[in-house]
Image (cartoon, rainbow, N blue to C red; front, top):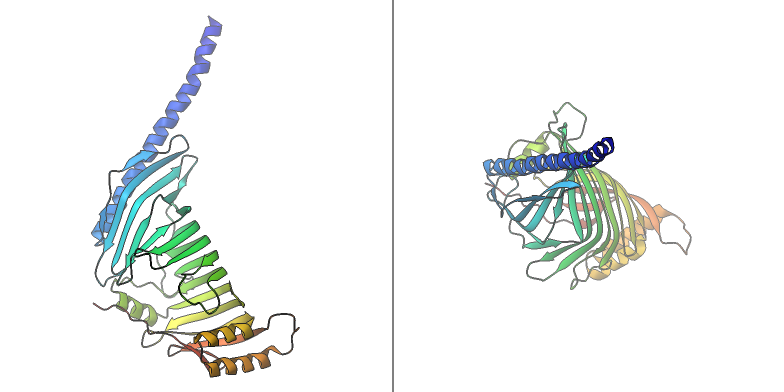
Amino acid sequence: MMRRRYWVIAVAIPLLLVAAEVVYWRIAAEQLRTGYRDWAADRVAEGWQVGSGPLSIGGWPRAATVTVPNLTLRHAGPTVPGDVNVASAGITLSVSLFDPYTLHLLLTGPMHVRVGDMPDVIVTGDETSVSMPLQQTDALSGVLFARNLRLEAATGAWHVTIGLLNADASVAAATPAHQPQPAATFSISSEAIALPAGIKWPLGPNISSLSMDGRLHGPLPGVRDIKRSAEAWRDGGGSLEITHLATGWGPLGLTASATLALDDQLQPMGSGNARIVGYADTLDRLAAAGTLTKSAATAAKAVLSLMAGTSDADEPSSVDVPLTLQYRTLSMRQIPLLRLPEVDWPVR
């Protein structure tokens, strides 16, 4: 009799544990579904149009998931973020039952994105996910991971592929002007970038690596009009600090840092420093492609050669240079290099 009771207890305990986990999973999944519906309602209140197919829950026994099929997001008008259309075949929201403090969003099908007058772009990848903490803090943060990411025009005219992409950003909930903390920080790293075919890229169609770290300073305005928001950020002393920029593209190896702001015409201005490896071959290619005039390339090579001094003939030429951006012109030691296109801010 006693032995039979032990067997009943031995069987009952695992069953109770499984039942408890099922209840825990169900509660977590329902909370996740309610959270998504609340988020959608908040976006609608802000002027977005949000639509999707019927939501479904799953993920047991390791996670609570909510699948959102045929998600559409639309925003129109001059207020931030402007005209935006997003249509995704499917997105899965997931919370691990063993780590319920992090939300994961996984792209489960092609996603169409169109911003303003830009063409419709299709986003696909072997794995594309965003993770963000669920606990409330003084900042909104998130991490993006993508493997074999592909951006393609809906017309099929061009496509870009990125073998590996990692990015993270943190935006402060409030940044009073007197506080030294940045309003936002970000970090991006990418590898194996293949640029659109059919275009003659001066430095080649493949970028081996590109990374950037930075901080955004100045209080972020509450104004939703894009141009007025830019003006308010500039007038509040806003600046973009690029603490580290590095890329390897064809003969060019570049590391740089810079501080940028907006001038009285709302055009980028600033200054920085760069270390350039392979500058001679890079300037020759840019001149041959017409990106730089031959006279500008010749003058730049002469100045850079003087600044670089002597180097090993078997090694690529390298030099540290100061750069300035003013009146849409990028210059090196007062030698104009590039004329940038004008930034046209949308107006109401």
